Image 1: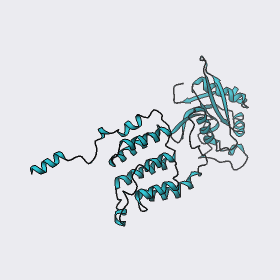
Image 2 (image 1 turned 30 degrees about the vertical axis):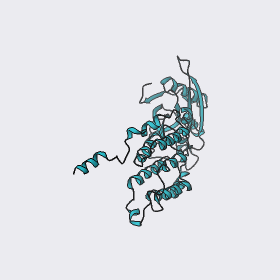
Image 3 (image 1 turned 90 degrees about the vertical axis):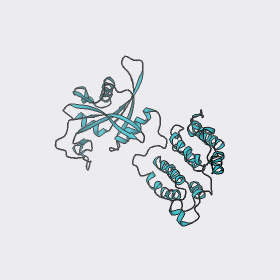
Image 4 (image 1 turned 120 degrees about the horizontal axis):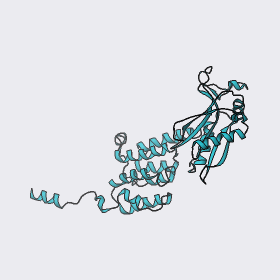
Length: 321
């Protein structure tokens, strides 16, 4: 009993305590450059300071949480670097029973989460990704099975959207507004996107207005005899980014039930004539205020909509203007 107790007191821990090596969070916080090179530098620093296999999983999950910060969430090389952290050959199943019962489940679930994040960000794996997964988990590993499903389905859905977005969304709000209005107004192929520069009243700052209107909408507006409304801000989502926009529309149409689509050149059958009102124009504004919305109306009036000069305009907005 004494010898057994002495052994328990003297034996070394199987896993090195995290205090003796850089933690996963510290590895990423110690990198000054938050870019792709900095992300790969963090991986190399971790490999040098951590030799224990049990720390690999914690680091991979920390890396997944920091990918947006380093702007590599849509970079295939970053995901492959994470998968290559795991040693090759150690997690291979020795028989079909081990393979079906998820040999080394924690490691496989971790890489499944890596592939899941790739899928959510639209990153399509390449052949090298499959080679790495096969070397780590074998040909019957669950990550390799998910890889085959991703490789089959993701290219089919990559070009299926009628409003495709660039792989990297712009950070500029003006460019985002153009993309959003193009998506909102795309139902009419003749819609024109126009950019205006306006000076804010009482300030020396210049703002922008992005407006969308088609020739058919101008025709509907100039023949309209009732009040018009400005409603908003409505919201549309471009992946993880939200863009707000406003609508210039008429009163509800009691004779229209449900969405209408143009089957002939008659404006009364236009797609713009909806149950909740006829849509005349849409816009997105850099600094939405009552003055900027009135500036938008003035610009529309100068751009082929003289009916707005004598039309009463009502604001239906759910924000402080």
